[in-house]
Image 1 (cartoon, helix red, strand yellow):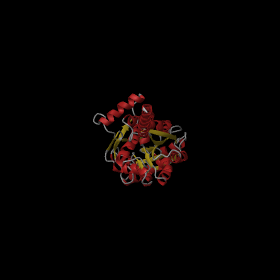
Image 2 (cartoon, one colour):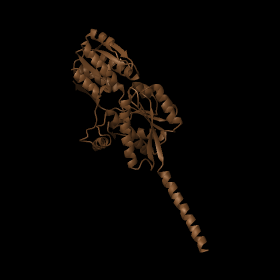
Image 3 (spheres, rainbow, N blue to C red):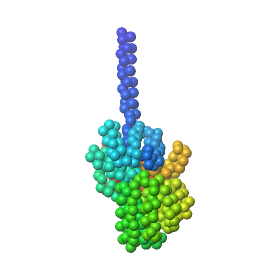
Image 4 (cartoon, rainbow, N blue to C red):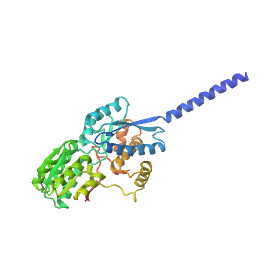
Length: 367
């Protein structure tokens, strides 16, 4: 009889242990989010910088206990900066991986292609850097943490006229949603302030010879060229303009804030005025200081603008889950809409009724 009781007690203890272990495993489950970035192709450098920021944030979230006891993991998909690839990627993370929160890259045309899929399936899509003005109307599940071109284009036009006395300019822009949106905003604001747009020309991604376009612009004798280009294109354009004898001012887009572009401008002896996001000062903001220290320790380099927004996008997932009391898309949307002055490394974040942010920008001089 004694052996029987020992056996019964052993079975009960084993069952209790099994239940405890099962509960622990349940509590230490996994919450997945998606990140659709241009990890290869023309925009691969940008996508991987964004990924670095995401990776650091996820590491810190998990070290702090995850979300509701669950570790967070990221399923990365490569858009290659192409709208069709982005659509395939978001369908995959929605229908195969059952993702409810997707971090998007910085290419407006990719965001605009993916947005209808996300909106139709009620999946939250958070863009780290897409700026096309019509993203504001993409739907209630579409958010972004970078200013719309409506802010950037106006700032550049205002500065050109009011601060450096530009009265006439030509525009050279990349022919995609990003370039078209920013070109239109700048043109309207520049003309509103009495400026004359002399020539408007476009180019396609992947073009390598811009001499014909630049020659046409040089004939206009414009005081400035407003260039809307990604780094790889901007470097070639500036170099070829130097070869052709252009000597005046460059106005640029925030996409030109790349060390290699700045160096090319300096080597050519040009003056360039570029819009720059106003980041919190690490000396005055402990959140930013800790981020910069952690990033440098992990990657042995200083964080770029894209690393900052990648980090913020992942951290916003945790904040939205807390404020929205859950990780369903509806909970997360509710959470993001409740955010007030979130201390992002890229600036204070809160969203308006269109899912847009309004961060301060300034114009800086490079030479």
